Length: 220
Ligand code: AMP
Image 1 (cartoon, rainbow, N blue to C red):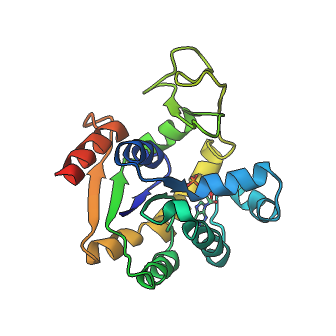
Image 2: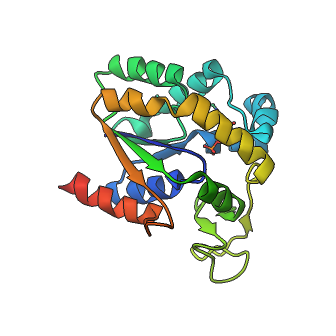
Image 3: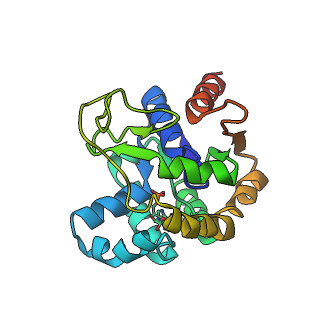
């Protein structure tokens, strides 16, 4: 099964992807995580994309597609994947469709999370992530704080704040989302695979609630 996660930064894509991955036993792959790891390890790719991530703009399609397709060709993803953060442009969505088509595969479900803009900024500023790359549990200082300040509930590792999780960079990330990524929603709607959810404090629905609803639906 191939699932993709759509939604602006801060909607909870990573949270939903992590729960679905665990419950459905499908690996989750985050393009942002791949880039951040490359930056941390100072690889050639890392050097190429570091400044882009710092600014909150998009990595060029050609490079992103090359990196993601190489990852999709790895054997652990042969039976399915949950893609978090890819595709992010129509060109990426079209390329993914043709890449999968060659293997008689297609995107089976595109999960689109929608959150009011003012909540997104608040969520991103308060987001803290477990520094352990095998855990990466996401906390929110206001909505889902850790039991002990600065420490992951699950594995006890220190929590970190992403460098791009600040108001200034977030403004570029939101611009990129609304200009480049939002049109993809219609792309998947046209293909009949779109599942949209409102995620908002206002209606009391968080990423964890969406994940439960989806698991019920998928398991039928
Ligand atoms: P994320 O962790 O999904 O918020 O991604 C962090 C950053 O990585 C983004 O702000 C972009 O600079 C870059 N990035 C991640 N995925 C993509 C993609 N599919 N296309 C272009 N840039 C991306």
